[in-house]
Amino acid sequence: MLASGMLLVTLLACLGLLALMSIWKERKFWGKLPPGPTPLPFIGNYLQLNTKKMYRCLTQMSKHYGPVFTIYLGLRRVVVLCGYDVIKEALVDQAEDFNGRGEQVTFNRLFQGYGVTFSNGERSKQLRRFSIATLRDFGVGKRSIEERIKEEAGYFVQAIQATRGAFIDPTFYLSKTVSNVMNSIVFGERFDYEDKEFLSLLQMTTTVKKFIASPLGQLYEIFFAVMKHLPGPQQEVFKEMQRLEDYMIKKVKQNQCTLDPNAPPRDFIDSFLIRMQEEKKNPNTEFHMKNLVMTTLSLFFAGTETVSSTLRFGFLLFMKHPDVQAKIHEEIDRVIGKNRQPQFEDRVKMPYTEAVIHEIQRFANFAPMGIPRRISKDTTFRDFFIPKGTEVFPMLGSVLTDRNFFSNPEDFNPQHFLDEKGQFKKSDGFIPFSIGKRNCFGEGLTRMELFLFFTIIMQNFRFKSSQAPEDIYVSPTPLGFTRVVPNYTMSFLPR
Image 1 (cartoon, rainbow, N blue to C red):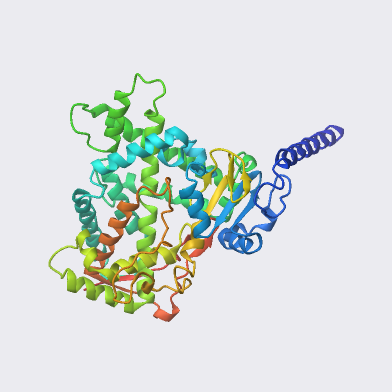
Image 2 (cartoon, rainbow, N blue to C red; image 1 turned 60 degrees about the horizontal axis):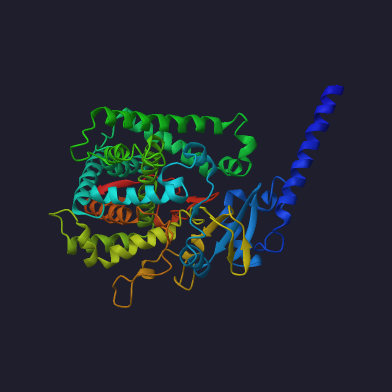
């Protein structure tokens, strides 16, 4: 009993000492940082934050503290940026100061600062430059990748035709279809929709993403230092992430065994392996196995979620707004007809469809808090001092819902992207891919995929819900740092 009492006293003393050290460490910044709610030792502002609806909570805080303010997620210091002017000033005008990659704790356990998405400094610059160039070599932005997207859309149409109008959840169909576009670039092949290995891979990524978006996942983001050692669902997620890494290692080794450095590269992995050979005498090279595996994994993650979720949300909105669906069908019939597949160049003659696709992305606002950034050096921003290493949340959702850009931001309205003559108009407020040097480099591929998938699918089908339009719920569900599409079933009816 005495021993356990002494242990408890010792533990409390250590925690108290750590608390004092934490307060002392931050003390030198008091009065210099942007304002914000007062944090508590260890837990930061946890008690003041609604982790289930983090974006809404921070938006409300900005009304009190202004467009630039500070919060603490546990011991993590975060500066929050709200509004177009502030975000542009940070990510574009002071891009070099705000170009670090911030914490995404669950992913960081897997990537550990390697790969194109979660790296920083010179590593990030080299991998990003290489990835953009290599994706371009494999047709991104060109006719060759367009043909690949159209081919995959054809497989989707065949799979949906086999459902014969039954009510289905389109989620997994879309994930398989969209993922195969990136698979063809990264692995040099597409997977059959019933391939067990492919289905297992998609299920693993789904498990990881669901955890990150869950309340427990948000709690882990704040208290990861303790929770990573505790039993719970997070431990199963860690195992799934290890299985994903093991799969990518296996694919890389398969390429290594059959690589011909004198032949044109078959896929992204080949291109990286060839670059590794070219730089094998450079002791400081960033082209090594760890960065290859993690870059491949980054591309696989990124190449599925955004496009498939946007398509799924679009289908739901079309059932909610049958007039929008009818107008797109009319534009497809008039510009393309029924005897050929749509082409990406058709979009210039289809302003309404283009406007609808943009409005779906704006209204969805899937990543309202953007991808976290990190201050790369001590920085002065709007008369505030922000120390090196501080994380930054650029609140992209605050721009996508700004009335200065969009007259009725809470409504789904394609007119937000149409001028008085019915022609497509761009908007500076449309920044779902972020802005600046670390914006999403897959934006061009995403735009092509969305246009071609939407038009090819809608050329073949009309969408039916089991509910009346007025009863369909379309608002994305806030889940921590993200928003997700409501679950639903639908019927694809042939046109």
